[in-house]
Length: 201
Length: 201
DNA sequence: GGGAAATGCTAGCGGCGCTAGACTGAGGTG
DNA sequence: CACCTCAGTCTAGCGCCGCTAGCATTTCCC
Image 1 (cartoon, helix red, strand yellow):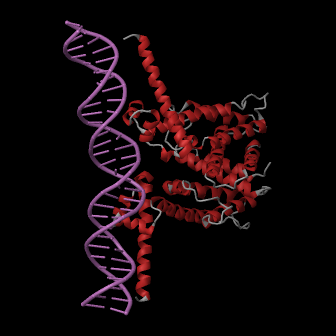
Image 2: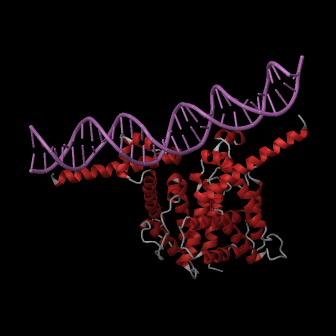
């Protein structure tokens, strides 16, 4: 076999795999994860069910994981895109914090099903584990950095970042589940910024 | 038919209904919600599947809701049991805040499946809606009160309580999903208390 | 051209939520 | 007492689920 045909085949496989992930994500965002079934997924890519398992031996849960990984990548990019970490930019201080919080909440709101996938599976701790998605670490580090860039940085930035992550995640989750008062989103962001821009006391 | 036999019948029905909810909860806490099926539930109470539907016409989702309502009751009681709201007691200030946060996180950790049920279904906003579970309001009001009892109360206690709720919920969720560093629980509680005991700025 | 390997399909297993329809036994009626 | 009614319960089964065994076909290498 020629090497070109081998790479051609590899690319076709990669493309089909991407189509599966994209189909799963689209279906989930449009009709919720309970509508994402192997039969519908096979239909969407024009193959039969067993083909899915040649790409994802772990079945549905592995496909959900793949969507989650894409989500972590996108979220990390959205958070990093706010210019956090560079003290000379607008990425420092309260403005940087507001930017990163807004980016996070915005992403969660625009892609609720993807966000749900990201936090539904046992992937591992954000640090503490080596096999944790790289982009999850990147996103977490962005939080640590923005906290360090505040006027009075916290004594324990790692713990502070854990709690900030929890706060933003909680607000995103409760908000998308209609558990918080609608129309109050901006005030919640300002409240978050106020709480975490200040020092530890 | 005598009225005593009627009330007897009603009580038997109520008892069986309670057994269904208890069985669902026990099964969920022990093996996760995916293990809670109508067949297993019917087995657990010694009846066939259709009996479940005479008690809960909405099927499984209505049963999950019933478990969630019990959970809201218990959580509200756990939070109120900290003596929050009475300024002369230990329920005020940073100590009261710490107590209520600890109660909340403790409940979520002891009953993860019940807690999951409480935040998985679209039940409605904590205020904003009349048909919201009463105990959910009670729990939320406890947060508002404890924030009001701080040295420098927030200007907008409702929004502050929303964010605090989100923060505690987020920490509970991420923690139980092994998303936060294990062994760091106490430091997270202290960090939460520090952030929300102080004033808005 | 022929054998081997890769590729994809059909068919089906056990289990799911849920429901239609039959059975059974207790209570009221002549 | 015989009869009828009806509430309560069960059996059986529908359409769907995730997943897999085994066969047909195509593709590739010699």
